[in-house]
Picture: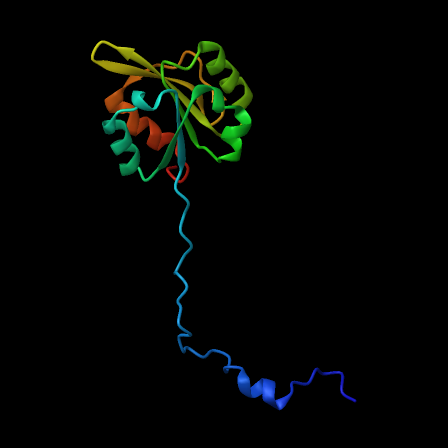
Length: 154
């Protein structure tokens, strides 16, 4: 008896030859799609205007809304969030707790503060690094700042 495995003639006939280029009804993509970065906007849904949502779409992001109390560090981690945007209705104690708990996690947190007819964005974490005291920026500068911290933008 041979130690080489034998294939039954009926099984061998049913198999397509190796290297057969015949399409079997479906094609595989050249490369797998890259998941979109996720952004969680925390606060009141009405705080987030259409221009910001348009900007996030243009950056190729998936985004969702969450009320302040639902946005816990565990919730943020489970949702694989890359960036947290916190509006002015999120209590300061909750902002500090989120930043402290998510430090070292590669998540970025930006806090919104209304100023006259615009707003200021202050970074709290950049890719998990505490950046207390970093300069703030206006809404029109947000796309540039987000592109610096979003995955696959390096």
